[in-house]
Length: 232
Image (cartoon, rainbow, N blue to C red):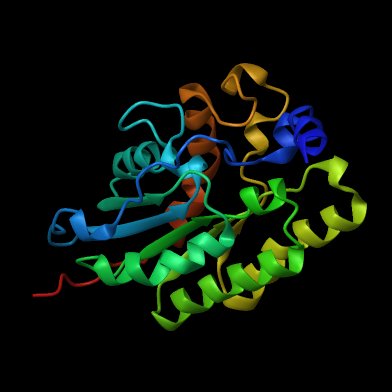
């Protein structure tokens, strides 16, 4: 297993992984401790792994935090709930999605999902990853929550068969469940090692800003035109 990990690290951007390490995962964020929504404000749930959790960055420097600021600058009244947990696989995301949704004071107007990188790092069979992501998307569809699905790609050294199966998961599920697909959302970092931290996996703060600039228009378009009513 060690040689596989070394091979993955030799292709930093292709791996799009999410910190499978010996470090303890960040504390699991929950929606239950978020502030009550302001009238007219749209809640956006970010469900993911270390790429959402802001691994290696300071408070308020994560992708969801900067995306929230960018959308507010567009005049959109959004409030993000960051449910990113470092090290999470799709199975982990599925295991906690009900808890996160049930703990929210307001049903999200939109959910962003970025999971699967840690599955790929562990060479989880693509069929299992697909099954877990499908179950997550089904829960959001049943709850009538719009979804933006952020695609990840497999590392080339895992082989063409694995890559073909893994890479096809995201567009197929986005079509099946009516989600907005952001194709390979880490593409702006390719060929720019200065935008990656020392682990060659996670974006630096300038890298976060590149990702936000590349995705904010699609996320803005996916938001409902009207904010959902605040429950009393």
